[in-house]
Image (cartoon, rainbow, N blue to C red; front, side, top):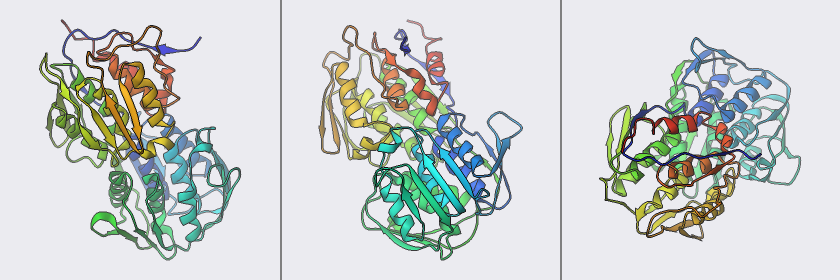
Length: 439
């Protein structure tokens, strides 16, 4: 029987303090840099979910020693000073795009032969915009199937490095993958950009993580040029922030349930995660936001009031598009989410998936180029008899539409275990919000 999830809508305001699990983006960056560093690193707050597990298992297949620390979310990584211990490995990373792209570049530093593959959807996610610059830097990479897509074989003998110019990429992960290996390129690495950077905050996160592990880079204003001299990362103790993308679902819950107040611990204006800026989007829609150094609080509209639709460019934080799309169902007026064409090459085609599932809740949804236009139902969202929200094996589809279930009766989430990719306990944490609610 097909697994589904549903919950009874709440009858009053939500009041809660939540600490989501560690950031997937920071976990995978820190894990890789610790492996490439000189000396031992102790990582705290490590995410325990599929994407991070695939990354850790792949690094261990490459010969890196990664062991449990003194507490459950701590890992100890023995760095290899830019070397890849194994001379041959086959890596399978499921549908973890971050792991696939980061590991493709890292394997080029080794001496040997490495194959990288994933689930069928991974074989549909383009990789040429990473392979091409790696080849320019001296890498030998073969496509084992369709040109431009996984699986890949890396015939590694180190990288000479140099300078490459990048056009606008489908994903910032290609840029981050190149930046990570910059210190270990023989001639260093210089990236020039002849167009805007997709999801720029993620690139800045990469630079901040590199700096934390002892590598400073020369970056021009606006990141038009980034130069990295030969060097090496240094092992250290590193604390991983809670995941800002995961936090968005709880902030959204506060915004759509009138009178609610939800605080996220461990995130604030010091965060290196661009998705922490989602709170400002909710503020533009009419929610109240309090942002401190290490916590963010969102307070929903007063009972009887509604959020208002907005026109917003989410190119800098595309993972927030699904959360915002669900919030838009409960706003007055149209919401337009602009410049998110790269959603087509995520875990699923998220633009098409959003159009399909928002329509089931009564919205009128149009895809205009790389923009998503949402007109919410005037009387508020409702679910037709027998309608089930499909999740397309996409964790963010499941988590974003689950928020709607707090307000709208009959929201049924199909295949809820897809959240194991980044947040295995999500549905338990969401259900906890409702326990202290009274009419």
